[in-house]
Amino acid sequence: MARWLSAGGRCSWRRLVVCSLTCLLLLQLYSFSNRVSVEVEKMKLLSALHPFPLQEHEQVEGLILLPPFGLKYPHKINLNEEFLNASSTARTIFFPIGAVDPRGDAKNDKHYYRPGKTWLDTDGNPIHAHGGGVLFDEKSMTYYWYGEYKNGPTYHAQETGTARVDVIGVSCYSSKNLWAWKYEGIVLAAEEKNETHDLYKMKVLERPKVIHNERTGKYVMFMHIDDATYNKASVGIATSDSPTGPFEYLHSMRPNKFDSRDMTVFRDDNGTAYLIYSSVRNKEIHISPLSQDYTDVLNETARALVGHHREAPAVFKYRNVYYMVTSGCSGWAPNEALVHEAESIFGPWETIGNPCVGANKDFRAATFFAQSTFVIPMPGAGPGSFIFMADRWNPNDLRDSRYVWLPLTVRQRNERYVGLPLWSRVSIFWHKKWRIPVRENGESNYVIDLQA
Ligand code: DGJ
Image 1 (tube, rainbow, N blue to C red):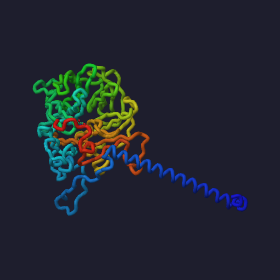
Image 2 (image 1 turned 180 degrees about the vertical axis):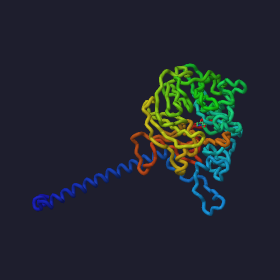
Image 3 (image 1 turned 60 degrees about the vertical axis):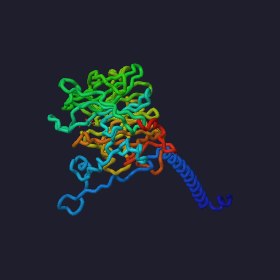
Image 4 (image 1 turned 135 degrees about the vertical axis):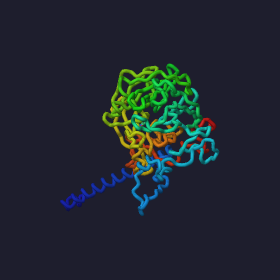
């Protein structure tokens, strides 16, 4: 070494620098390979916890479109146009034939969600719980799904031309396993004759959500109440002593005098609940805490996503961070979902991007041709696993609107994954067919009574 240094003057120094650089490089390589194997281990763990992310489906149901008359070559397909075109030959891509039927005893099909297919209840009738939300009732250990019962003919409102179905009411379905749903009836019915009533059948009742108030013991329903022109822009409130109703309609209001259209309610871990709604003609999202009995809002309004024009808010919380999935505003036509996050429910809310993963670009840019309505924790799955509930509206026949339920996962802020640079921290994974994770013996972790 001494010779090396003394004899060779400049040359030795050069060698020394080269040597040090090589060592540094080797060290870097060593630590990188360590990090890679830690990440790979994490991926393995993640895939064990969430079987979904690694089974990303790129393929969308066989896309076969006939070229227009006279053209020899298939034209470039605009999936959005095809989706809205009632006579499109691509119809079955969006509204596939066949149904999810909980009555069938075909073992292979049990508990599988098939987004976009007609979903039957335990009596064999199509489920009508559109724009809905799910409540888990701890007393009865039962899930209740409430939604718009749109089981009527579609027509166009005279004033606006918007496709609509007369209000029939809010439906309720119960389930122990989130897959087989028993129809519990209309728990809040439309008003047939009194034209001045908020629930008059020719007005608008959308996006009902129910939360339970532990102090009063009441089940409290919030919903978007409007007139046929969407100018009343109010929120309606109804209560019941039982999750299966009947609900008594109290009144509608404009929260703190603000217009309110698409909305949801979110009950936090400490029992405080919030109304979250699109306001100022959908330009912004407002968040207001509810009174202790949940039948009013407090005089407090946080404004979020100002100027962003978002609707269909679905709020959930994971490890003290609040998340909100929203859609753009394009009537019944699908558009791109975005996820926003905040450390306080009052904000600031930061937009973290489009959560849709898989299928193809057009599907991802249109929220898999659906619109957010609610997010619930996925029972029996790993931490950060949720179910994203969305509506695939059919503006040509709203009664035939479908459901798109998909796994949604949230990663911690500091979690990084090798090889998955395009995946957003909050991801909704496309699947033509999937089910909630099961135990080794094939039984679901969470199923209490399969016959429910
Ligand atoms: C989008 C909303 O999210 C739906 O609830 C419904 O109001 C439609 N607009 C009506 O066009």
